[in-house]
Image 1 (cartoon, rainbow, N blue to C red):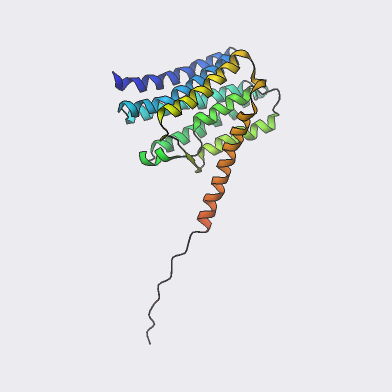
Image 2 (cartoon, rainbow, N blue to C red):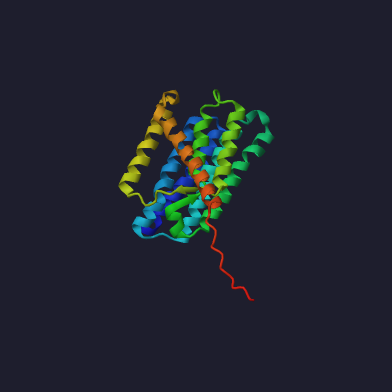
Length: 241
């Protein structure tokens, strides 16, 4: 029975993504966003549950990727197509549809990455983070100009398929990790339920800016290391006289 628990959590993630798309179709953005944040919570614990129970396997890994494509790729793109790109009609769906393509490529690359490597860092930002940010930005459609959102939207897509190394935090003890994730997500639920997104504290924006600053610094450092790679000493060749 225990081997099915992580997969049930992953399927719950997928089901939340599907329901979220339905809510967006009915114009209920608030409840649709709540479902995406619930999917993020389920995605944050299913892999750890599998490792704790000792039931990790390829099936769970593939199932998790399929769920993430829907909940954090297709669903956020559907949010965007019905808000920021709604005035573009079918073109809006075509432009928004690029986001899940970036996400699908990133997940496919992750699936062929060695397990030891994925425990230390990710290549490119994870799709749950990118999709969650997109859903969050949808609530500011009246304040964020379209051109700024387009830069952020496709910037997140490019960051997903980039080779920037991001710490995975998978080695953080479960109680501490679960507490941090749960407190953040439940606070987001509270804001959504009370329609108080205007009261989001400044530390959220500082944390988000710090995260992207870290990505930028890491990218620059990696480039510097590649440029300054030491040259191999030349072997002295004996001259024949």
